[in-house]
Length: 131
Image (cartoon, rainbow, N blue to C red):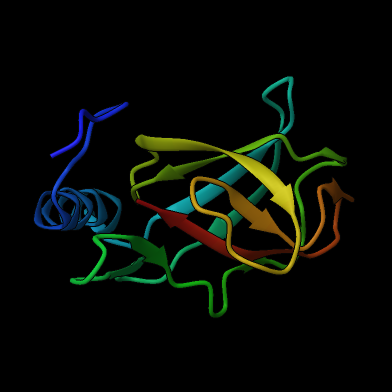
């Protein structure tokens, strides 16, 4: 085996870790949420997640969040999305990820339809994957 440049986990370790993480997001009496914030921590949008919030690949260990019907139809404030927080239904933050505008998945980033959020307008989560 070659000397690793960084930590290297087995697929099984990633799979089990991401299943446990998914369980944290799905915990509680309702589905988890994704809170989109600007660089000053102002809440721009509050997107409900599915329950379960996603699936974990047994072949790669990647957690892919279910983005079907994940939209805030009326954003809370106007601003530029900088990051998002995945919370359980009680509002406990379990992961923060930077945002990016686009149409395709980017591992480790929240991909939104736009970073320019307008109060009262829709905000759609295009993709979110970790792993």
